[in-house]
Amino acid sequence: MSPILTISGLHKSFGKVEVLKGIDLTMQQGDVVSLIGSSGSGKTTLLRCVNLLEDFEQGSIELAGQSIGYKQDGGQRRRLSEREIARQRAMTGMAFQQFNLFPHMTAIRNVMLGLIKTKKMPKDEARAIAEKWLERVGMGQRRDHYPGQLSGGQQQRVAIARAIAMNPQIMLFDEVTSALDPELVAEVLAVVRDLANEGMTMLLVTHEMRFARDVSSKVVFMHQGRIHEEGTPEQIFGAPKTERLQGFLANSEF
Amino acid sequence: MNYDFNFDVIWRNWDLLAEGLGLGLFLAIVSIAIGCGIGLLAAFGMLSRHRTLRWIAVAYVSAIRNTPILVLILFCYFALPQLGIALDKISSFVFTLSIYAGAYLAEVFRSGLVALPKGLREAGLAIGLTEFKIKTNIIIPVMFRNVLPSLSNNFISLFKDTSLAAAIAVPELTFYARKINVESFRVIETWMVASMIYVVACYVIAALLRRLELRLAVPR
Image (tube, rainbow over all chains, first blue to last red):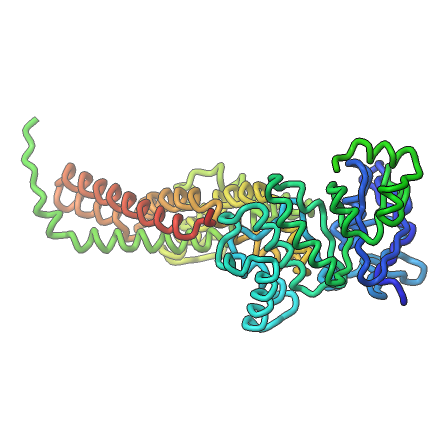
């Protein structure tokens, strides 16, 4: 089976600071990969490169057989057109740390927007899909509420529904519980766990180590812009090889 | 002081005053609508990546904001025709007031845009929207709701500024008040009533806009 996502030799700099120094990572359909590491290790930047919220200078990302963001044109590396990039972004779904719901739209309108504007779906069809997904994340009763009227956990669940309703090839989760009060973390993790169990391909950045251990098929430990150690959850959490990882885990809460 | 108040001439001419008030409101509404369009373009211009666009927008805003509005009105009405752009009184005034409103609203919109969390744009990108669709579906509607209170203030100022149209004989409230004043010599009565009409009108407009703000505000 060919991989759904292949990242090879990825380099990314912010000005003079190189934050990704050659990342190689492959994922099969249905894989759940957790990126862990201390802040500044580049894990969020890596995630954001996959849907081109960040440009990258070197290397390539291939998603479902398509080269993401750039093409080789007579030996020249060219950025794709904005329209083309927008289309590719819709192949990925992303949930953000700060939810980023559209505050002037009800929950259901938030989910419908991409279906109508990007996928050019008729309103009725979009509404049916949005209702289905809001139901699935347990937000069916609140579909007509505005984001400002929902708790953080509820907002994040709507945000996840908004991303996944687009039927993406892969879901990207960027520290989706970091902005939540502790008592709201569980309801969001339960939603993510359900998606994982259903075979959704997922790449997630997380500080929830226990959760990463439970849901991941692979865990990747990043340090200073490189993949420092990777393996199954049992290997990474049970028998960390490098000193760096051992130190990181010792300082993390379980 | 011995002055016999006599409002008869004013009551006899109430229809002129009402007509003048109506025209003033009309001028303000049309101007703020056009001004919003201009202001939006100028605000995006000021925040543009392109240096030339930025320069044009900033030049427009500072040129207009640093010119007294009466000078602008006279310039557009008397000087532009010499340059081959002849407009009738009302069009000329609407043109002036729109450009004037646009410069002030550009600043209002610019600060509204800057204040938006950048995650909104990213969330739009993440569901595959183009920059244009993000602006029209997310950025502008959210910003607009956030700046409604300052928009209301601008509208009320603009309505009061319509009194300056009297300078080019646009028949709005101040124009008619002056006419009644000149014909009747009821100086105190005329300007007292004209002032009261402005006060009441502004008060009512403010109350209506407040209700509109509440209805359109982002619910929380």
